[in-house]
Length: 242
Ligand code: ATP
Picture 1 (cartoon, rainbow, N blue to C red):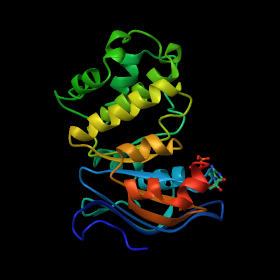
Picture 2 (cartoon, rainbow, N blue to C red):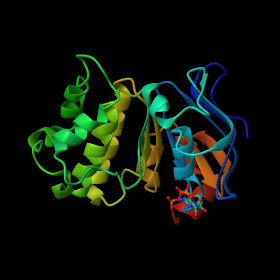
Picture 3 (tube, rainbow, N blue to C red):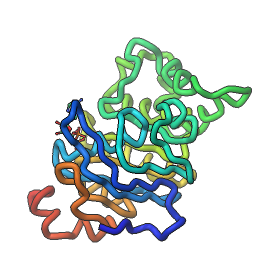
């Protein structure tokens, strides 16, 4: 399936991507593009390979094929170097330091940055998530699910990413907060950060995405404008129960 971004416009370009767990293939040749400034959604059933795709881009597993970010091949680069190049992953389950304070979690997000402006992104994080500023001294483990997700996103923003990848940010969050999180994702994009998001909440996510890829057992089976994917009869039947 041809990717949908004009040649030369992709900030992230993935081709023939394969990845496996102890010999068991989880991705079978994925092609995907993300242009600068886009919100791109990756959707699909449990086990389709969505998390694996994000982990592969973040350098957390061995892969075959090509991953090119802003003209540089990411494969064989260590995860911390990929992070320094401007690729951040907010992992599924958030993985915060639950016994540390909100402020310490955020500051740890800047561990790889140096210089006087090291904690500069804090202003943006507080602007996006005023609740975090109100709870700076609180332990991360005492926050609500929604606040923990804000903190996980805030921590990723401390690396000043150009590409922010989010793995199921709505997981474990009260329904009324899901819209808040997705609205924050839109505001982050408005600040010039490109977004690649994996979500089970299809309707809400496709509403903020420009384009989407549908994954099935490690393959892209459909891609296109998010609006078209959202109205596709097969997608609605398979994933929306409609
Ligand atoms: P979910 O929504 O359930 O997280 P997903 O689309 O993100 O699903 P992945 O987690 O990427 O899917 O899983 C893709 C395949 O790889 C599945 O068959 C899964 O069982 C397998 N897999 C994922 N993580 C591991 C692991 N750590 N060890 C072995 N197999 C794994």
